[in-house]
Length: 414
Image (cartoon, rainbow, N blue to C red; front, side, top):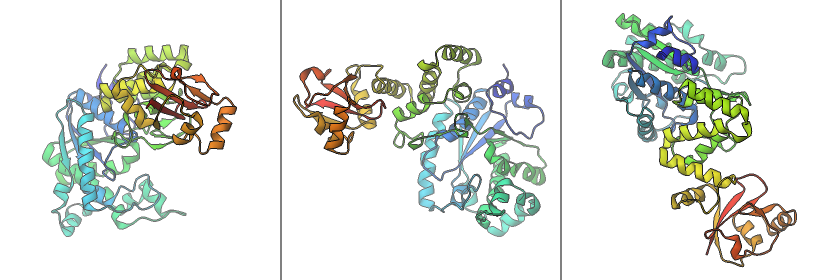
């Protein structure tokens, strides 16, 4: 299968400036830019990095740009109101965090990492207006969707700084074409307007023909919303912001309607493998076979095989598919990050432990839970007042209220 055929099958091509997708099958140099308004990428960014990874594996040379300059302005795309400006120091710290992540996501590929602050910091305002601004038509800029939405009835308006963002991104492409021979820019479809800014600028300034390609935004078919968030909020790639276990569980909870698409976009499984996974999944959706394969693959890619295995074991404990005693020391430490933990001796009052771990807000609520048979110890319902020696398995108890696996606490023998 050619690169273009593979990308089409994986739903990773939407808009493009080249007429024939086979143009992709001759490796050149491409670039992908990252906003640095935060110090970590999130799941919403991961899809386009998988596109970059596939291009790199097919022989394309990747140039990854961290937006030390553009992040000082803030990308107005997809935003209903003006972004809050961040300091240079904060952006610089974010650049360092993002730079480490993007290198990991490209695997063994030889990556050229650049920061657009390095060339923008010395450009004068008049110089920019003469060399860049004169090549842009206000009529064209005012027709950009994100600008018309902000300027239209009920819109919040747009500052000159954010209005100019498109010119800055266009100049990035020209600079990278001049100094790194970049011939393709990739990004999400919500960036398409900004991505088009560099193509005509390069043609006007240098006479060279370059291209841009976007991929569709990934949508959760069950909700109709952009894929990448959970009930608890944004899913980050930084393990300090979203633990590998929580990251793994996000993928385990992926909707059945979209899991086939997620496997195509976010994993490196080939077509026969994904078709086999989906066939087994369809035969018994309750086993969540497709989601488990998805979760293991993506967590391994982002956090490594060891973290993925620990995340799988912890999740199996929380869902009752693995005994609490069948967990390594590293798994126990990961479990403590996911749920409350406490130490207790034989004879300790279960009511008190429910309150101490936050499973109940008060003693009276804890008593109601006990009376309604809503408490279990290592998967076994219990209405006893105190812990017995038999309740501990290898010195551990998984104390749970109700059926939700996160409504649990780890009790270790004192």
